[in-house]
Image (cartoon, rainbow, N blue to C red; front, side, top):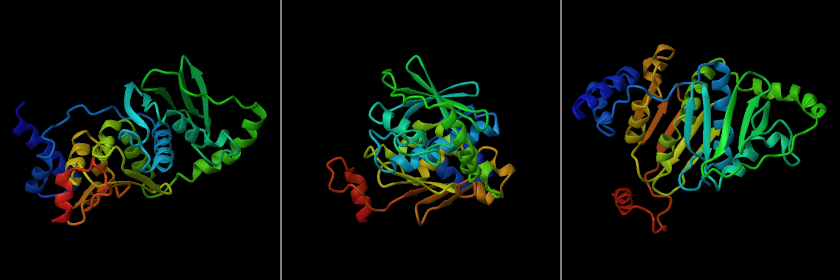
Length: 294
């Protein structure tokens, strides 16, 4: 298929999702020029999507702008096996990622931190985390193949006593207006870490955080334009199907003047700063510095 055909097909997808005029949709589509017919598979159950969304929320707020080598959530890439998900963690971020996900059970902290209801088991250097509240699991591995740090198991009586508070914490993720959309989008981002990491490609870091369990904000200064990252996410199916449950205008929104895009009723926010946050760094792209001055 020719590049022009890909652009046309992607432009039509963007128009359907956003309600933008076709000419504007074509502008976005030209940023990536790729129409992905078979995106990464979605988690098939609500429980799995919720669990994956919880993992995103914990890791986003844990690392914020402290990533290494552009691994936004500490994840370099992901592999899928049916509904199964394996996250390949950056070797220098892996131990901290595990500690944050299991924060309710490490150190002096208890089950109101980390992923509520999380339990774990070690298997051949891999760490399988799963929920004690609903049927869901994720496998964690170090991307370099080295074994992951694994905390000691806790006595059953402690785990049982904590479960009630964990269930209460997990219920805070229920939102009457957009929890299903949020879970789907955050889960999709976790399953597409190489796309998410594009925001941090220029400097190896970007800002990523949530407002409670409402939205996920991704902010960066150099590299991809908002148009390019939004188009790449849409090309890889991030917003597919959202127009079925949301007003078209809210499935994906793009505000060129403020360099901001919002996806899924504003549960994912993309924002590129006009000025470089690393202007004193020798790695700051000169073209972006010049653009900021103009």
